[in-house]
Length: 415
Image (cartoon, rainbow, N blue to C red; front, side, top):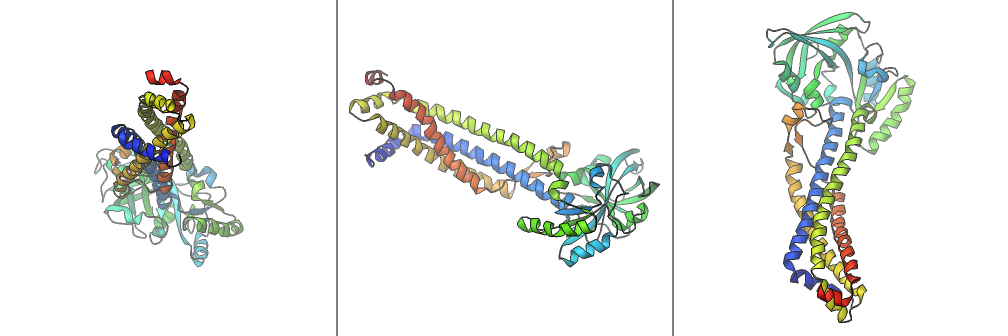
């Protein structure tokens, strides 16, 4: 019996070839959809985390303890003092570090050369021209024009912001701001480069000028609003941050990692992950409905066959095992097909992605990806989907088989 039932189940799969094909195809489509959706959602999250670190937060940063609570107001009166000595200390530990000054201002535009007069509240970031690229990737994202030079009154602007303003390389702008002492200050800057970044925040709001230019205009001397560092991801990052904690305490500074600095994004990602789980559940639910319909038809169409087997003396347990083996075989075929199709479709998603830059330019989804949505390889998803496909087929087959076995043999033969 141990050999007979599997052999009979295998023969039945081929004997009802069309039914097997239809049912296994439904399973394959469900498995494929699950893999693709999961790949894209995880790819979006991974790229967003990476772009957050590469363009906004670094791996971690040192701040004045009173700065971060009011960071949205971009205060200049709570800086990191003697920033250069801290940077030299970090570099002596083989840790790349770079200072930045974040401040707000009123951008003034004039009709010549801009399309019209106007003003706009903006967030500006002063960067160390020589060392910012040790931590961030702004330098490699200049699409038009050139990168900043130390000491110049130059400005880098995100491409979406430049497009909205009608700005081009060579245009002059005026920024009205306040110094660290609270006095009004005017900066006359020339746009030297347009940035095209993987991070939509840079494209939509980015404005960067040389650190020494900002320090002079804002009376910041050797100060910075934050000292940002770059660390390898993983356990090494955690270990290094733990080693740097005493240094931060000694200097009376706060050391925040990227998860704290990007808390708004992390919260958004967690919220959307819950929504993504619902989407994945619905994908599987739709697939389960299709599978259940075909399996129910398959089993109820064979009620007479079931009655014949019982009339010939076959026990209910053996009949149930036979039908569940057939369902497992169909699930196995569908899972193989779904994993294969999902893997094949995922190859171009990982290598080329899906371009939806126009959608991102028109609206802010909260993720840190500006144009190309890439998939990712997560083999645990493939394994999970494979076994769920088999389990789902067996589970769906269990109920109608159980119901059919409750029928009397004459009722089965008249079915």
